[in-house]
Amino acid sequence: MDKEMTLEEAFVELDEMIKKLEDRSITLEDSFQEYDKGMKLLKYCNDKIDKVEKKILIINEDGETHEF
Amino acid sequence: MQNIYTVGQVNAYIKNMFAQDFMLGRIYIKGEVSNCKYHTSGHIYFTLKDETGTIACVMFAGQRSGLAFSMKEGQKVIVLGSVSIYERDGRYQLYAKEILLEGSGLLYQKLEELKKKLEEMGMFSQEYKQPIPRYIEKLGIVTASTGAAVRDIINIAKRRNPYLQIILYPALVQGEGAAESIVKGIETLDRYRVDTIIIGRGGGSIEDLWAFNEEIVARAVFQCSTPIISAVGHETDTTISDYVADLRAPTPSAAAELAVFDYGALQEKLWDYQRRMGSLLKNKLIYIRSIAENYSLKLNYLSPVSQIREKRQYAADLENRLQENMKKLILNKRYQLDIYIEKMNGLSPLQKLNQGYSFVADERGMAVTDVEQVKKDDLLRIHVANGEISAKVLDKVKMRRNHNG
Image (cartoon, rainbow over all chains, first blue to last red; front, side):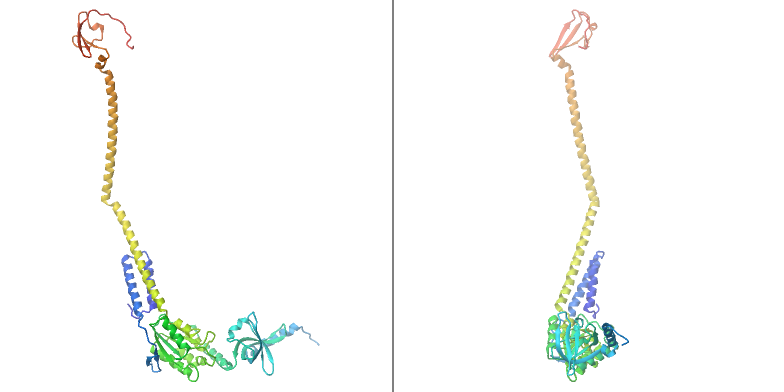
């Protein structure tokens, strides 16, 4: 999976996967594969959000930061 | 008195003169407000006056966006509009497009000029606008580190997504050096690689907001490779940075709403995806299973075992029917036989003997049925039901008898 994928791109892919899963003609193997891929993508989306509450930083002209 | 004109002709003539005058078509006039009437139709009628005289003014409801404050008697204002003739009264008046409090007048003119210049350079052009990313991790803010604007932005951003990294560049937003400070902030955050930058400040007079109308700020916003949301003052204040920015927000709070995605909504979206994919896969399995079941039914039906079972059933049926028919046939025959037996019974010689008849035989045992068969003194044997009698022919008489009797 491309590490640089944005959430928007992930959602576009998820929407496509869901479209494929909705298609009756898809084989069972393929649907398992899509499902698996989708679950991984969801996990990726979840992991992409760094769930640590952030302190607000102050930046100065030189690009140095310190806490607010 | 060579030429005589109607009132209408004269008024129309003057109106045309006014209309052709370049200066009267777009003019700033300053003066003091008097006789100000807000009409229910939305039009505003007032008079501008100074020490020397007055001029009648009207601002039509359609132009009301050009007035950002509530106009009151005695206020010193600058009105932008066109002077034209009101033919019905034969009066000229000022048709106002924009009204500003005086003091901001000069700045306003400067603003208009700069706006025009930058617009001609294409800096407001839609094609240069960058899309604001939907899901960001780092938000940069250029505003004063104290005041309502920064608090509003931080509160809303944190509420929507507590995991967002906010980086604040505390800038001077008004007074000496404000424009330079804002430019530094934009450049610093752009280098720091945040995802989106909000520049802005709370409401104030046109002078207070002026830094955001400076050309150097406009250029910094334009050149910034990070998408910028501009949120200066209140909804009615529009600055040049608003035009140049990739997106304009009516207030700093609104800018935070636009910049920061709602983490809860995102979670819900992810859950929704998960639910949908789960249920789709489940449906797929149910569907496949039902197909398999269908095939299994069909196959069962077609299998040799079931064929054999069916043939066996058919054979058993045939056997049953055969037996039934046979039984019927036998019954029928037995019935017929009974009839014969009855008949035979009726014909039995013994029966006849019982009824008092007897059987007469000659000496050779032949039945005597003709008188001519015997002669006098022949011995006869007479069979009766319970024995035999020997007898001798004494005499014979031949006679005719009706056989049908």
